[in-house]
Length: 254
Image 1 (cartoon, rainbow, N blue to C red):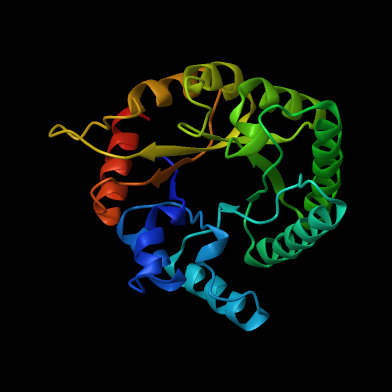
Image 2: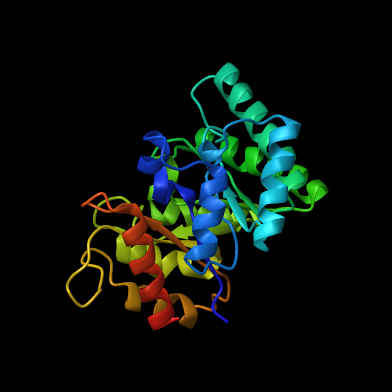
């Protein structure tokens, strides 16, 4: 069976409008046929133990395990030691939360800049080594994402993954302009998770920005055997519809 999740950023407009919360997200994932939950940390209304326990119980009732939790705000590189320490504190906090939820993976970002000078690279590598040890102790797999900063350049991702041994949450779209194909080609071998972006669809249900069929085929050819996660950002604002259409495409090609 094809393993499917939805990064809850796909519903960020519903969240902001007060039309979806974490509990509704769990129910919507169940309705849409997901096999796991892949929430974004901003979807959590609280980080206290009582709330996290309620979320975990809701997932148990829905019979959906937590797969990957994408954490914003816990990235490694910032220009000052004080800022880096604040981000590291956030990362540690979320590692504990993700452990409590019983998820398999946590995504934490590199931060930094596209240029990634040597001193920045050293800070990123040291940070991921520290976070990797924390995640190992928590029973979690740490992955980075091509998301922003240093990680939008494929060669930077290759260097970081090779140096640290961590895996990649490969987003089909989040590369520097003109680097998308290079990102797929060079970085698919590091992928331990993926996000399939979707913005708009034609009348036949195909995505007009990313060739989902090509992406899925390339990932499989590169040895990827993990779950397929939706991260749709629909131009027309129909977040539920876009998630359903992206899942249909994944099932068509995976």
